[in-house]
Every structure is written in C-alpha cells, then in structure tokens.
Amino acid sequence: MTPAELSRTVLDAVCRAVDAGELDVAPPERVTLTEPGPGGCGDFATNVALRLARPAARTPLYVADILRARLLDADGVRDVVVTGPGFLNISLRAHDDLLTGLVREIRARGTEYGHGDALAGRTVVLRVPYEVRAEVVADAVARIVATQGGRAEIEHGEPVTLRPVPAPEDPAPLGPDAARWALLHPAPHDRPRITADHLVQREINPLFRVRYAHARVRALLRNADDLGFSPEPGELGFADQAGTADADERGYPVDAPGPGRPGASRPVSGAARPHPLQTPLADHPRILQTAATAHAPDRLARHLLTVADALLPLLPEVLPVGEEKPGAAHRARLALAEAAGAVLAGGLSLLGIDAPEHL
Image (cartoon, rainbow, N blue to C red; front, side):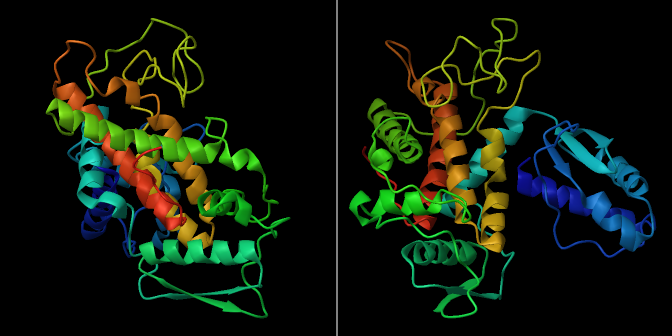
C-alpha cells in the first residue's frame, strides 16, 4: 500500500463512519500522513481525528477510536494505535509491500512524483526586492508552486512579500548550479555562504552528494543494461542483521559505513525495519506541498540531501559481484535506486540545478 493509497483508505474510513451515523461531520478533502512523532509508532501517523473532533462535537479520542475500528478492517493495515490526544499511528502489514508499491508509483510518475493539486486554480503573487537571492528564491518558489497546480507571479516593489537575507557577495563565480544551491539551501532567514566549499567534489559538500547520488544511479542503470537486466520492483533480499552488531541512532551497524559511504543498506533491528529510503521517498509529496505553500525551497533542498544520504549506502549492493548472476533482488534494488534518482532529478530541476548523467 502506497502513502497515497493509505491516505485514501483513511479518508474512506471517515466517510464510512459518517454514512453509518457514527460521526456527524463533513469529511475532509484529503488526509495528510506524516512520520510518527515522539511517542508514536508504526509506519505513518495522522491527526485527522483531532481535525474532525471540533466540527463533530466529539473528543479527539472518541473520533480516533471510531476511525481505528474502521481502519483495522482495511486491507494492508496490520495495526492502529491511538497516542497522545488522538493521533492515529498506522502499521502496515509488510514493509516490503509498502516499499514495492511506493517504487512502482514513483517509476510510473517519474520526476512528476509528488505533484498534486493543493494550489489548483490559485495565483500566488511574490513581490521581491531587486536582489539576486530574492530573485533566485522567487524563481524556485514559482516552479514548486506549479507542481501543486498553482501559478506564481513575480513582481517588484513594495510591499515586499518575499525577502530572504541577501547574499553577502555575487555568487556568479561559483557557476550556475553551485550558486543556486548556495542561495537556496539555507533557510531564508539564514545568511548564505558564497564560498568555494560549494565546488568541492567530495562528500563534505551537500550539493556534490545529491548530484553524485543521481549520477551513480544513472551509471548503475547503464551498467545493468550492459549485464542484461532491468529494474523490477520487489523484495530487496537483504538478510536480517539483527544481533550481528550494535546499531547507531539510524539503525546501521556501528562498524558499518553510514550515509554517503559504501556499506549496509538495511538497519539492524530485532524485527525487520523499513529501508532507510522508505520514509524520505514517501514524504516527498508532503515536502513539495509544504515548500509550495510556505514559499520555502530550502525545505526541498534539505529533503533532497536526506534522500541522497539514504540512497548512497544502497548503491554498492545493486549490481551482482564477481560470478554472481543478476537475480530478483538485484532488479528490485535497481528499481529502488531508479525511483530515488527520479526524486533527486525532479527536485534538482525544481531548484533550477542540473541533474547530471555523469559526474
């Protein structure tokens, strides 16, 4: 079950509760899913019960209990736990099934994965000063707004509605890609750094990690084609590493390389955990919507870095080694890498930065 499918499942539970007379409320247009917060559990969480409580004249816990009973009957849902004032924490039946569905959805939509209609029919007016960073941020915001069905008009003059902290110097010497990253990656209230660090071709440079991850995916696709196999979503085939090593805070063995370096692609756990790419890929539509509505391309830039850092440890595990023959697991890993590469390519394009085929 993909996040979009789960969102529709939760919305269907609301509608069925309304039709049965259990809730007297108008169903929302959409249900937002997030990663469970502190004290939460499962794969996804939603605050829909809190949103519906006031118009339904019921407590959030009452609404949550009604929806929990409905969701427990839904296909693909393993468990639902109510936490805090009424958050629904949803566990799906199999992480591999969820990830496989997610990969299929991303491959079907390509670089348009995450595009939606949150701003459909709306015109967003961006009034900016004559300053290079403001112009670049406004351009990126306009691109991102378009992914949500809206249209942005960029104007100059007072009153200014978009005024990021200006660049301390001309970023042009960095070149177009590094210059845009230097201006877009920091939050608007942070002073951007216009330094040669953005040109370093090493993992200490965030832009390099994002573009390198994309270029590696493209190279793997070419190499796999040479070996005669293509991507196919499915089980990744990583053996459970439970008990083999201590784990860090992200679930990787402490003696294994972390994000950005070759090493284990699956976290250590007492039970199977989702692949580190699952959450950032599933979160991409929400990030795009938030970046569009908050006029904050920096959120997309930081999200791309999260995707790249989760992707890089997978890449050495994609192709067969030595005399090993390509199998279903290799095809599945290649499909996952391809999906992550599509997210990186789409995101870089929205920031106005090239996604290289070779690096």
